[in-house]
Length: 221
Image 1: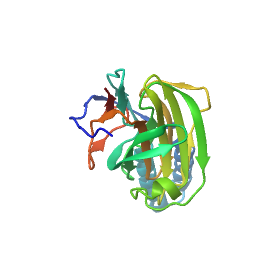
Image 2: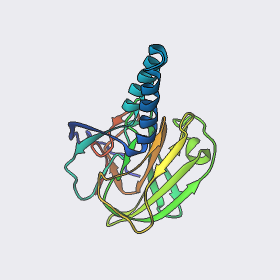
Image 3: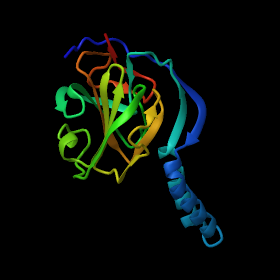
C-alpha cells in the first residue's frame, strides 16, 4: 500500500441548490401538514415548518463542477475520513480502503468516484451501530457497488449508521457511471467506504474533511 499523501484537489461548488428527489415525498407531506394546521393553530404549524426547514437542509443536493481527470478517484461522499486500511474482497481483490463518515449535517447524496461500469451489486442486511466505527463495515446494513474501470476494480459501500433508516441506490448491473455522477444516498447519517486499487497514491489522511465529487481521494501512478 502506498501512503504518500498530497494536498486535496479543491474544485468548485455552484451556488444553485437543488433538493434530492428521494426527499420529495417527505417534504410534500410536511408542506401539506403545515398547510392544514395553518387553519387550525399556528403553534403546530410553526413546529412543522421548523421541521420542514431541517428536512430541506438535510436533502440538499448542490450542483458541483469538478475537473475530472483520468486516474483520479474522487470522494463518493461528504464527510470525514475515519479509516484508511488494506482489505480483500471477491470483486476488488487486494484493495486500499478509505472510510468516510457522514454526520447529520453532511450532504448525503453519493457520487461515483470515477468513470466505470457497474459489474457488482450486493445488498447485505445488518445492524445499525455507530457508522464511524471500523466494525460498522462488517456488521451494519450495507450496499456494495462495484465498478469495472480502466484502472482496475473500484467499489463503493454505502453503510447505514446508528440513525440512518434507508439506503438508496438506483443502479443496475451494466449501468455506466461517469465520474461525479449521482447514484444514491443514505438517509440520516451514515458512512461510505471506498475500495481502490492497491497501487493508488492517497491524497487524504485520517481526519480530513472531503466533499463528494470535489476532493481527490487518490491517484493511480
